[in-house]
Image (cartoon, rainbow, N blue to C red; front, side, top):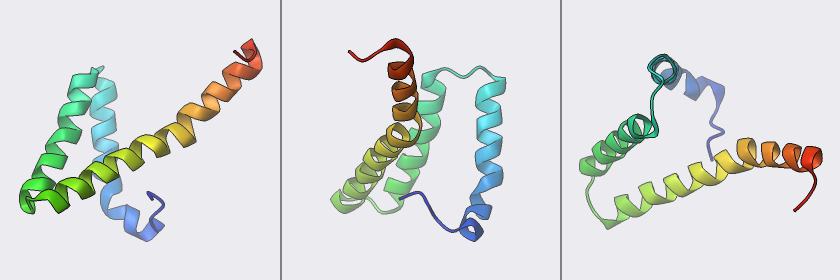
Length: 87
């Protein structure tokens, strides 16, 4: 779950802000963003290679996807459904 304590977030916030600004300034395509995330995952995996680490990282990716949908995409879908009607 991404809801870590605010005090624990501080160590990451500057780098996250910098990456997001670069993505937006450069009008980054999905490949650019995929490259950054894949590079991070590769480095984490190679620090502790093995099935357990791969399984852990794949689980994180799944949770990130679900959380993104739950918190950002689903509310937008609900808003559009209310505006345009249900299927």
